Image (cartoon, rainbow, N blue to C red; front, top):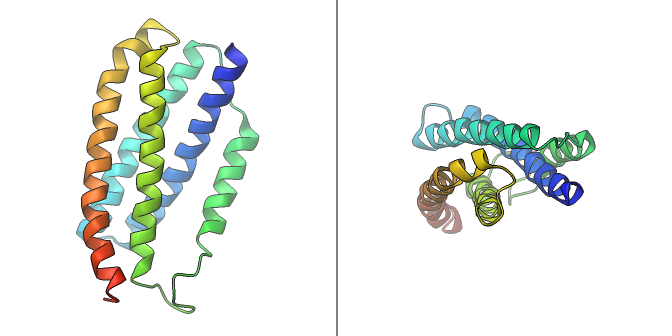
Length: 158
């Protein structure tokens, strides 16, 4: 059973690696703006959540599958090459797509916490998941609010 749990948790740990890379880059790109502050705050929280996930893995004797983390790191870098309707400059669509990608990742993390709520691998995890679920739901709400506004502008070409 630990093998399957280990694979599942490592998939989510790798996803957190990609999300951290995305939020760091976006926070720098939009520094000094509301969008930059959102990416910075969410990125810090994702780092904390990743540390919590690593602690869960350590408590349950699950090691890191480094190949998954390396692949996610590379994929995040390759994802930057996506063309958003502008070849030589950033498009208004870029922050919208970044927020959408972040929302997908946060939703995945929310599903992880809910799965661990249903089947906690240890008592400490059982005690933590309600908070982690609430935080992920708040992150998703904050990103979604910003994503909708950014999308409204981007899809109108502004």
